[in-house]
Length: 144
Image 1 (cartoon, one colour):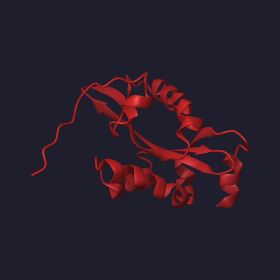
Image 2 (image 1 turned 30 degrees about the vertical axis):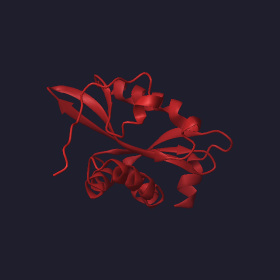
Image 3 (image 1 turned 180 degrees about the vertical axis):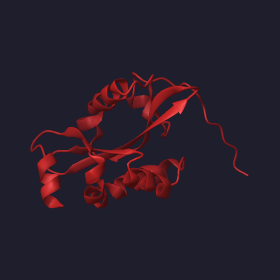
Image 4 (image 1 turned 90 degrees about the vertical axis):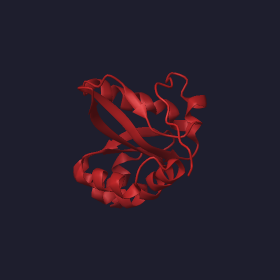
């Protein structure tokens, strides 16, 4: 497992890599808590569902790596109204300013897959840092 991570490591700079689905079982234990933390902060999905989808290859796991894993992201391709969309289902990590611009790699992947957009399911705070994204829909909630 360590050898697989070392093959992704970029010492001194952070880079975003998509973990090949065939290798995700080896890497998942080291990314699992980051994804779980992101999901627990939003409450927009069930961790077990995302974990199952990642481990079965229905969602992709992306890692921001330098000499360690700095962040983890999961994406899911879905169809809405007949058009493909890339959904960022979870994202968590430290020192966001080091890796936030790397989202361009996910956007390129989505474009290459024919997606019409990238959607982010997350906390309201993402609006402050993702200036090139706009609020398209609102989820409203009333506690009972």
